[in-house]
Structure formats: structure tokens, C-alpha cells
Image (tube, rainbow, N blue to C red; front, side):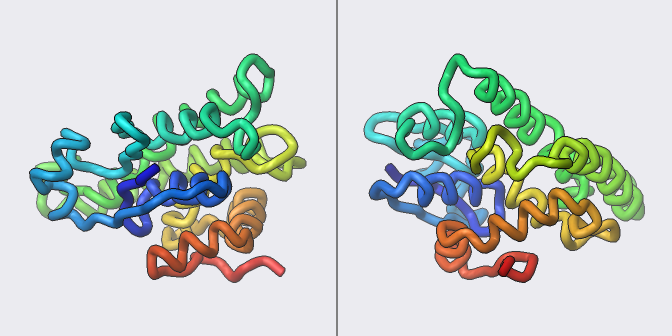
Length: 211
């Protein structure tokens, strides 16, 4: 398996999942120019990361990759089995993370795409932060009394939350203010697989590693 990724992006989640699986894989980190290269566009016509190549399969889209890895590697225990109540919960939260939380960050990172007013970028970013707060509040409430996003053990849902929650540590209302999310992110930051991913990316967690 080969993952095309970029440091700090949501593709971090797929990298973590591959480490959890524990089977041979390769990661290639791309910069913006690399994502738009003719070679990469043959693999992913959208010119973005992530993409997972597994044999003849070229699979884009983070949520699709994570669910594929769950199904292809059931012994890794990175997601509930198909047909269980927890699997339905996994789908629900994966859709929420991919379709609600992740898009809420776009106006923060790319405000110029959401206004024609060159002086209005700060207002667009402020609106983004309000939306992120709304979604993180929902997730934080869900995590009350829970160790993990779904079921009784870590899963790809936790891995998917990890990079996005890390982005918000730099917001005025930091991820640290959502106590249940912060607790989970600190626990993940201490996971040896997550530490390997950070080392491969050349960066560090946004939080002190949990004792």
C-alpha cells in the first residue's frame, strides 16, 4: 500500500491508520506543486491528498480510505465489524467529521475563496471559527463519559478527528477548551504510532504528550 499525503493535512489520519494496521506501507509527502503534477493527476484527477494506492486500486477521499482500511484489515481492530451497532455509529461520525467539521475549516485556511472583498478575510475566518466551535461542541458532548469516539477502543474515527482537532489549537477558542476532545487528543498524541507519523512528517503534536 502507498499513501500520498502532506504533513499536517487530514491525510495524517490515514497515515495513523496504516501504522495501527502494522503491515508494510509507503508514504509519499507532496507539496502543492506535487499535487498538481501530471504524474499525480493520473492517480488523482482532483490534485489533492490523500490518495491510497493498493495494487490496481487508486482510492481518493479520506473517509473512503479509512473505511476501506477497516474492511480490508479486520484483524487490526481499527473499526467495528460490519452489521454491528457500533459500525453504524462509526459511519455516522465519519460522515460528520468529513462532511461537517472538515468543511468548516476551509474558510479559515482559504478565506479568499469565500468573499470577493479583499478586506473581508478576517470576517470570513471569524465565521469559520464559529462553525468549528459548533461542531467541536457536538463532538465534545458526545465524548462525555467516553474514552473513544466509537465503541470501547480506538478507531479510524479517532484518527480522523486528530488532525482537525490539532488545527483548532491555534484558534482563539482553542481545542484545549473542549475538555473531552483535548483529553482524547492528548491520549492519541502519546500513541507510539502517532508519534511515528509526526516524526515522518517532521512536525510535533500541538499538545504535550500525555503521561
